[in-house]
Image (cartoon, one colour):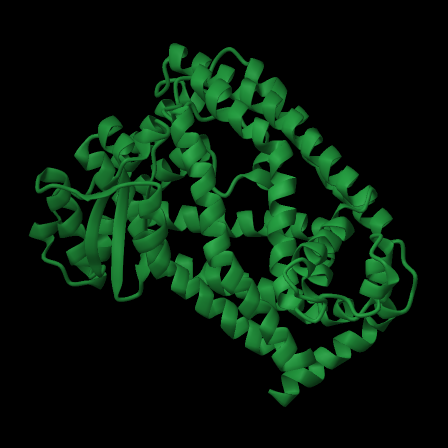
Length: 470
């Protein structure tokens, strides 16, 4: 532990200028946040002309009908126009809040509100909680019309929206309530660790964050998700038998197999699994069950089981922990930096002893351009994992026979799993009106999955390889 703190102290010495130099951090944040936004707009403008193409890519021509392709193009074009407006509107809003001292005002307003109940400046954690939720509420209200438009105009126009106004409002208040009920104790514990551990907070905070993430693995499906969706055990039948048989052969610790009523909000479809290492739950959207045949759903889940088999969730969590550690290792220099708060219009009395939550918020803003680059790297890792999971589905028969010693007779019918996965992916793309013409740079920045064209080509290559090996 002492070695770790020694190395962290070296980092802080290199960043000592942050605490004394009067750097115009506000200008820096404005410049680079606009830079990221304009770059994302540039990517949209690269992608937009592709929505005017009149035929699908040659590799997909035999899989996607002209009518479905035209619907997809119109949907993509409308989404792109909305995304362009949303980005510019949100950036203008963020820029105005920065320029006119919104965050300093929120901190002061939180102090005034608590003062009316007899709580002074010494109650920093309590003031930080009020500050966070006041800031969250006030900053989210101006963008609420964008959510309304997206749900009731854009998604409605293209036949996806199933959300009623009443459900939309209920979801909004539920999400606010969940944010407060979970966020308040999380923030209190988060900030208490800073006060308790002092400048040696990094390892303790890392342990707390990991514990919280593991707790959410249990809390989200059992407490939070039921507030928004209904999970129903999938009935006995062909699909359940296929999935349970596949999970059993792979020794996947399947505890529950659920259908989720995603259709109450949207006709988009998906499937995923969650849980602790010894107890997993598979969730399939009812829309996926309606749109695909049981053998295609089985192929989709074979892909998902590939993620489990190769420990992709664990690896992504490890990468995210390294990312969080890097951020926390840099933060102490900004934690005790009055010039940082002064540059964002906080009064001298507040800046003299920077509140932890305020310093952390401003620090995150400063990291905006770095986070944009990191997201590209994370997407690249995610796409690599998708290739591996696709290949796993194609080769699942050989995996079961050669690595798990499963009797070949029990694997009969799995030799076409890759072909079935390809059909399922095509169905998902057609039903969801997903974009089929994609600019490479736009995809690299935004997409965590390879494009449909790329995946189908890879699946065909995997199947050819598989036949040769047999």
